[in-house]
Length: 216
Image 1 (tube, rainbow, N blue to C red):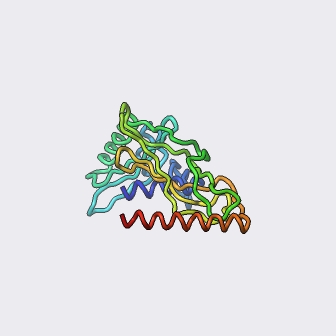
Image 2: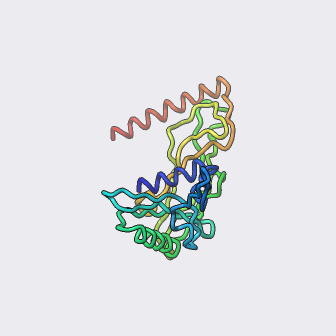
Image 3: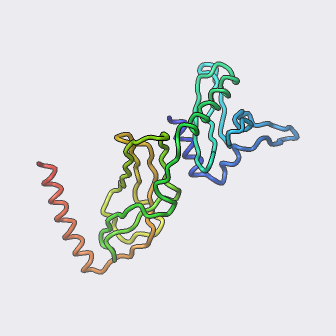
C-alpha cells in the first residue's frame, strides 16, 4: 500500500518527469542501458515504474498501466524469480482492468462544493480538484459511493484562487478509497469592517452552539 501511494504521488505531482519511467532504453557513456521493467513489453498499456531485488525479500515491482483513460498501479513483492515477478504483475494488472472500472465523479476543475469564508466579500468559495476525481469500482457493483469535503474553517479572507483549502474523501460503503486535495476556484477579497464584524458575531454563535453540542 505504501509503495502504491508513493507511485501515485510521483505520477500526480511530477507529470513532467514521469515519462522517464517508460523509456525503453537510454545510452550513457556509449553504453546502451535497457529498461528492466518487463511490463513495458507486455501489451497491457504499461508505462512504468520500477523493479527491485533484495536478497532477503526477493524480487519486486511497482507497475502502472493505462487503458481507456483509466490508470492502475500494481505492486508485487517477494517473488522468487524475475520471471515470477513479471508474470504475477501482468496478471494482477490485467485482472484489475477486467474486474474494475474507473467511475468519473467530478471533472478536473469542476466545483465539488463550497468552503465557508470568514470576513470576505462573499461567505463561501467554490472548491475543485485539479485532476478528475475517479473512483475504482468493481464492475456490476451496487456499493454506495459517498464523497465528503474536509477542511478547517471557516477560511479567513482574503483567499487567492488556486489556494489549497482542504480535501475530498471518497468512501465505498464505510471504507475510504480516495483522497485528493481541493483548491479555491476564485478569489475572495477581504470584506468591509461591517462584514467582518457580522461574520465575527455569526462565528461566535456557531462556536457556542458547537461547544454546547459537544457537552451533550
